[in-house]
Amino acid sequence: MIIGLAALAAAGVLAVRTALFLSHAARTTGVVSDPRQHPKIRFTTAEGKAVEFVQNGWVSRPAGAPVPVAYDPRDPAGTAQVATFWACWGLPLWLLPMGLAFTLLPLFGFQAEFRGSRDAEAET
Image 1 (cartoon, one colour):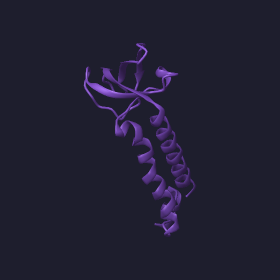
Image 2 (cartoon, rainbow, N blue to C red; image 1 turned 30 degrees about the vertical axis):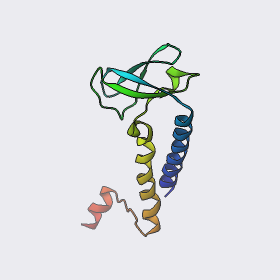
Image 3 (cartoon, one colour; image 1 turned 180 degrees about the horizontal axis):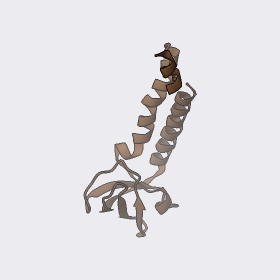
Image 4 (cartoon, rainbow, N blue to C red; image 1 turned 90 degrees about the horizontal axis):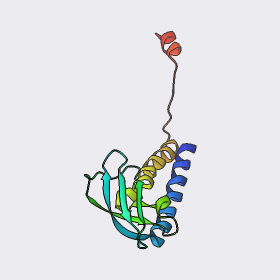
């Protein structure tokens, strides 16, 4: 149950941080420069500074594909992220059902019982 509450708390904190970031972020269009598992995205800020960053998942586009980018103008390289729904909200939405499951299942009487291999052999 503690794991579930921690996951729910993390989902809440991440959702608030994402909402605050997106409400103040500058937006532009970037280009996928390297489409690996963690693609590299290149964009130019409103001030004309070229920036390249690594997106940690949630984006699957070929090289050269345009992607929306959100960034903090005070630190474009350190805050830039792809501004698609799943890139922004994927982690909080993934943590939510996991947190609910770990929190609610014990409340409704679900118990996990783990027995070692010696206990199983002794009973046979």
